[in-house]
Length: 285
Image (cartoon, rainbow, N blue to C red):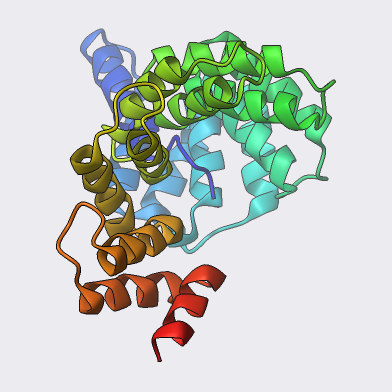
């Protein structure tokens, strides 16, 4: 259920516990065992040791139980318990739990849906440098959900997250520069941030970058580069890119015209509900 915080959280927990054990801190034993068994996929043993660690007051164990109860693979998914333990850790300033609690409030999972509460917990995590929280809070500011609508605040949050390498933030920042929302319109900056996200294989960024290269916005027209990134996005299943690949082959735009390739890509896009692709296939019948 949580977008982030599972394996990365547990690797961090195990590292912390190993360090504490080397220093002779026996309280880390149960937490380390819980993290170890979670990574191995033995969720029953993980729960057993995490609950022991939680009784010892280990904040990372609270966070771990929140993650475990949110995990469908654990066989013990319980959104109410996930929310309980996540909130308990978040209130102790555990940053991943603050982000995850924001997600729970935004989605209404295990708690009453509340965008204002989501924004509150995203803000706490964002203040600690969590890039995912910065992105999600930025989206709330753009949409005016749970906070007063503020494009400049969204831009500032996306910038902080993008500088940390968050691909979604880089995509959103590129879009703000392209559209001139919250910042002066700047196609070159849009290309810069779309490129950063595209190079992390973020399909929507690859698609947007391909369009800019095709139009010559933010630089010279570059049809080979445009097709390269359009194909990358299409191969990752982005319907808009699949439709465009169909057009590229149908029209012989920068490639040798190939109707069978065009049909292949139209069919992929149509299967995902693309009305444009469905219309193209009807025209080819």
